[in-house]
Image (tube, rainbow, N blue to C red):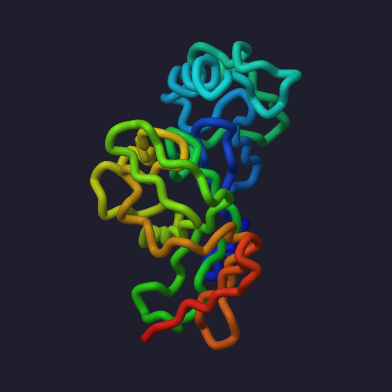
Length: 218
């Protein structure tokens, strides 16, 4: 998680199990939906279908099998635990199949150039994943994504029209299809922390590579 340096609002990444990794802007009273829903409510049928039929059919919390996932958006919303003032919000971005993220951080300043100031960067939580057997899938290891915010900084801005529904319909786990335009770098390993240094450059802490990488402008 990290706070937007311009608005003070909190942004988080949220790993799903096999499906619908999320990027969220956390508002007061935010209920992200887990475990009843991952990804947008409109995709509840896909969430249920993938979790019950693919990759072993078991959620991380074994005491709550995926067969208990609601079959409709209305049913999922009704099941959410509610407190006074709480409300559900769809994520600002999600990936259909799990693309597990790790550390996230805003770039504070213009060390990389004005066009990168205030962008949100997202590290990877898995490396060395096997190639996909799904035709057309693009598996990248240790990726670093760059996310641009809208003018009012309340949502994400995408150049790729395929992302305007706020879902990257990738083809398999760890596949970056429909998010190729977000790829900023690769082979960073598990990027556990992403921060801006005193010199304004971007720093990525890699657990698996035992290194701290500095990203700077040539």
